[in-house]
Length: 177
Length: 211
Image (cartoon, rainbow over all chains, first blue to last red; front, side, top):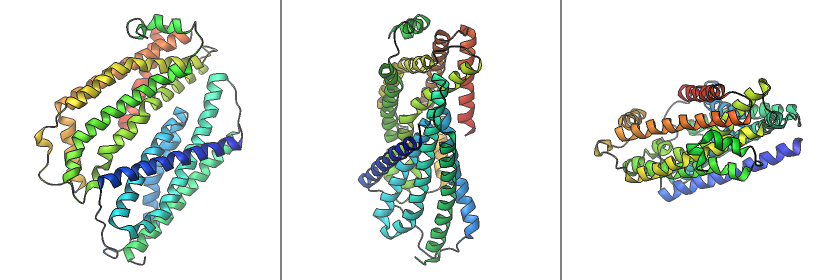
């Protein structure tokens, strides 16, 4: 069990996220949901650092839930990932129907966030599979370092996504596009 | 499979004489997930549907109420199966019990068949359920406070409280079967196995309350 196995897990999770986003978007579109967004420039933007910390705390919670899924051999992480992707799909469809111009603010950090969550879920499934083999057949195959590096990388991506989200949010509020 | 209900100890011991059947085992948690998704979908449509329809401009607040329960129901049984199995397998490895650890995983999955009648009944109950008229609030759910008020109404409803209570009883029965399965697969005594299974239940319950 080497790096290709982790790559297959990343691919499978990406497919899962894609399906969940499409399902969420289809639900929201069929329901004709609309959202009323505050107009650009309607309030003063919060400092970037403060917003970033706040977003890291919110997204870090989801990331931690995915990581805790190692106790269920990665299944809980997949559940959290699908639920969030489903909701993201609903948000994308709702914004596309209500205010399509806002999609540019949603897309950049959304893609980064889901890249982070997908990588985290794949890493946790990789580590979970190692745990299952260890418990069930007393065989320690695979390289722990690969899984841990992928998990650390996903944590870094969560922080980067939060920073991009804070920047785009500030730009939107300032009305700078 | 009926032996699982009225002779669980005999059932799990008899399973050990046949080779593991993973497809049959997977049918337990997956069947539960499918039935739970149907009942959640019916209930959420009846509870949140009319309110979402009237809540113009603030529908996103109710999104989690209407659909997230259905998405979560798809995973919760599989997660419970794998997490409880991981906990019990770890305990077995630490205490140096059996050499056939995958049997714990198989036995726990088979225990989920005991939940299928209850989950089928839950679909019938969800179909028969009519939300009280008092649930229709004066105006749309526009703020977090409105949403909290609506959640309180949901928690106080006697029908839903009874269903939640019964669901908890069946969950305890599921963990009892985990204990019996563990007893059959390992050298652990029946009281010890039941204690381990119920400890697992209490830990998971505490975690779900805390988070």
